[in-house]
Image 1: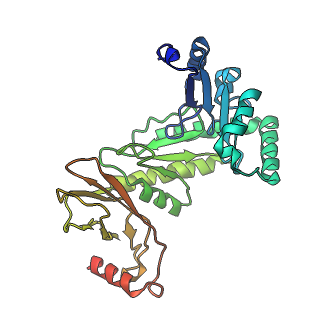
Image 2: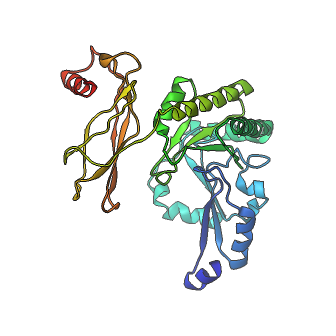
Length: 340
């Protein structure tokens, strides 16, 4: 591919991520870098998820594969391991000088605040002088992988980085948003990943561990994942698909579970065939408080044409827990009508 592209362009750039955040795998830089050298291409690596985490000294994927000196442009963020805002680009002096004058995002932005720069320098000092923290992180990741793979759900997890991905069950898709809310009630923070970050039907949970987590913390996480899968196996936290709307302008989804109800939302797109597929992926649970104790959580409605599958959209609805004394008459009417 590089050999074919070279005659048609003055410069060829090969851009990859050091660590891919949706799967936790690493770009094979040990194979990519020599190809770039052979064909005269510039290697550009976004190592946002590798900086401070991957490599013996936390220098990223390039150090991990021993090809750091062969990366022409290295970029990353301060918002992951370094825990502040901002980002960086490392390259040759002529290229950096070029970016200073030609990069709009740099030319029309303000300088980073001095406290941010000081925090970055301090974090880099810690990474450089305390490599045991990186080893502790990867030890924790290995321990969690073993703990989850030991559960009776057929996991075969592995990761080359510190990002651990747990795929949602298929073919009956787990409602990962509601699942993560359940984990939060257990005191566990796990990120849901779903469309459009990943293709339809490939939702997943992304676990981010730290080197300071204890084995008790990790065991508690494994217990929480086990509990979530047991709830799913019992019929909870599943996406609901309704093939046809009851009215041209309304999407209706109903939950049969005794502990939850569904809300009704208007469609924001027309449908020539009159047939719409509607999914509500975050339910409204009563939590045993009855009609006046509804916990109105985020509700997402995915709508697409059954005939064409070209038009897709998502409707997002956000609401906080509202008790009876705070809910206005309009919400009371909707809630009462659905509960009935």
